[in-house]
Amino acid sequence: MKKKLLILLVLTLMLFVNISVGSAAEFKEEYKLSVVVGPGFPWGAGAERFVELVEERTAGKVNIKPYFGGKLFAGKQTNEFAMLQQGQIDMAISSTINWSSQVKELNVFSLPFMYQGYDQIDAIYSGKTGEYILNTLEKKGVKAFGWGENGFRQITNSKRAITSPDDLRGLRVRVVGTPIFFDTYNALGARPVSMPWGSAINGFKQGVVDGQENPLLGVEIPVKIWNYHTHITLWNYLFDPLVIGINKDVWDNFDSKTQNIIEQSAKEALEYEQMLARMGLDDGSALNYLKENNEEGIFSFEDPIKFIESKGMKVNTLSAAQYEAFKAKTEPVRAKWRKIIGEELYQILLKDLEGK
Image 1 (spheres, rainbow, N blue to C red):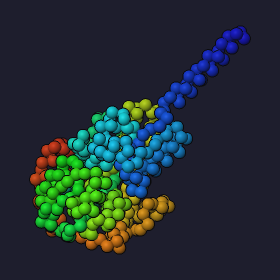
Image 2 (spheres, rainbow, N blue to C red):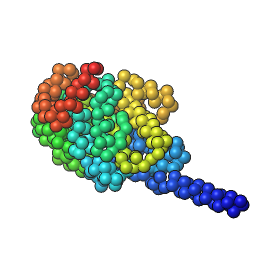
Image 3 (cartoon, rainbow, N blue to C red):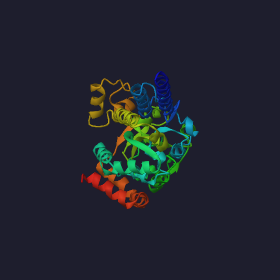
């Protein structure tokens, strides 16, 4: 009898050890998180928040290491999605623009002069369009959560104020290296060029590149664009959302409890990041959120427009008529890319924008 009890005890201990080892083996020593920018950007701050929340809520079992400054893809942002699909990168917090070469549907956010305010963007996030995009990414091997953002993209330059399409004629503008950006700036008569940011700065200094386009809080203020350009036009010509994506095999290897923790942490981190990217540019909601939640944020000011004016930048905001002139000029671009992203998604988008 004692012998049977001893055998049972040994078997129980062996089972316990195997379960314990199996549980430990569920987690990698490190999960690589790709981040294009540094911590001083809303995007980077969102990445830091995500890492902190997951570490805290999993008691350190899920160790996510952020690789800032695009270190994991050697400076070529458009490689990131393929590396994420293939498992070379475990996770990424990224702009949908950077993945749009591999996922054509993501170009829906880059349709020029399609969106005019945050109410429309929020309708997309919470509507069928946002759902469609996240499902599309999952079908391509990336479990994604939304939504953070870089924000509406604005144009700056060193030559002149831009208030009409004619003002862009001949200007050499550094743009993202995806086809829809080239189509848009060619339609407006500019000379779009694609290059890494470091090369663009050298181009600004040498006078071989006249301008660039980026979100104000998302990029332009963190990189101190006033050191290179004197003119900025707030034209909200397209929108730049962020998502947190996880390689599907990595995601499927987590137990349901860990998945829930990661999902909730991603959504909270993206909400925080979104408020940083909207602060002082919306109806006041973002700033109120940060104050009510005792968030210090990453900026020392509350009004980004006044801030860049204090740095010597001349700010131009388009009137409704001026906006329509740019919109009319880029109609062929929207018509072309409507077909590329697909009529089904385009019709879903229109319904979300109409509140249906």
